[in-house]
Amino acid sequence: MSDTPEPRLRGAIVPVTPFQQNCAILWDDATKRALIVDPGGDVDRILAAIGQTGVTVERILLTHGHLDHAGGAAELAEALRARPDTANVPIEGPDRRDAFLLSGLAAQAASYGFEARDVTPDRWFIEGDSVVLGPHRFDILHCPGHTPGHIVFVNHAARFALVGDVLFQGSVGRTDFPYGSHDALIGAIRSKLLPLGDEFSFLCGHGPGSTIGAERRTNPFLRA
Image (cartoon, rainbow, N blue to C red; front, side, top):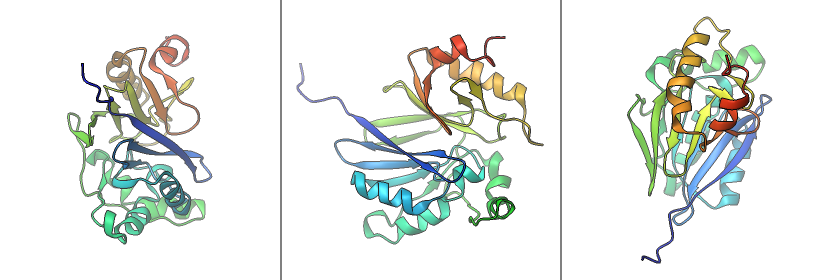
């Protein structure tokens, strides 16, 4: 038997913006290489958390194009790219079908009385793509309904997913937008998230996380 320890994925949550969005910092414990997922704003707070954890950011990832998830991406990328060790940090995701939302971030922010920059990702994702952080692999699932291009990041080895605003503890994402679809959202949850297995835990875009099993049993939107 090998005495080599199993790769360990660690994480921290930084609640940002008045919407209390869960910006996630995920890193490999051995190398301290990290991903930042959904930096919606409060970039100074995110940068402080990066400093406290001592990680080096490899990528900024977006689950979808709403202001509270993507509004700080351009500012964060600019700050990180000014540092020698993170000069090439890309912004990646979501699916291209959210391009119209990312190109309208400044307008979204203005409607709430604050500022954000529009974002053009360095890479768009499609289902079947993956992101690798050292030994940790995140597979991409396209889960539309909340937005047309919403994606989910799934780490099968850790039985963990970042689901953005698709699924919540006891609820599901809003679909009362002109581009929203409740049927598409529930269809994506049933066909792509529930099959991951009851033991899968997930971090959602707002509030506490949960497990697939708990939501399968108790979520009123999934019991019909």
